Image (cartoon, rainbow, N blue to C red):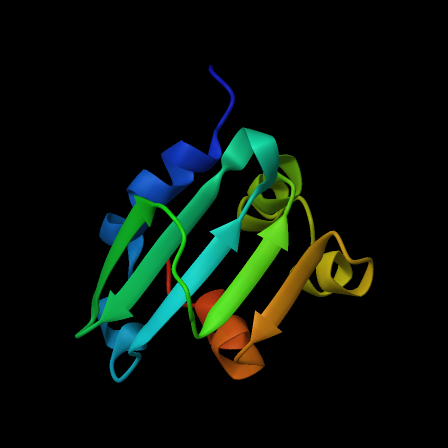
Length: 107
């Protein structure tokens, strides 16, 4: 089996969004995932999600991490709170959105 990439995860996000949990969420999340992962914009609005490569000037939340650490966090190998505490993942912006984000998707 091939290794999971950031691109794989981002392409799965729209289909993995749980619409009921995303109700009322209107947000842009910017991901900066190092040289391997690149920059991605995730937009959640009207219980739908889009994910595309790029940089958004004023996101509601910005997440910076190395690609491998982000993948480990999403796949459950790295506890999100540990990742944040050890600065493997750096968040800026709406931290309530960050807490909610982890429960919006069935990846």
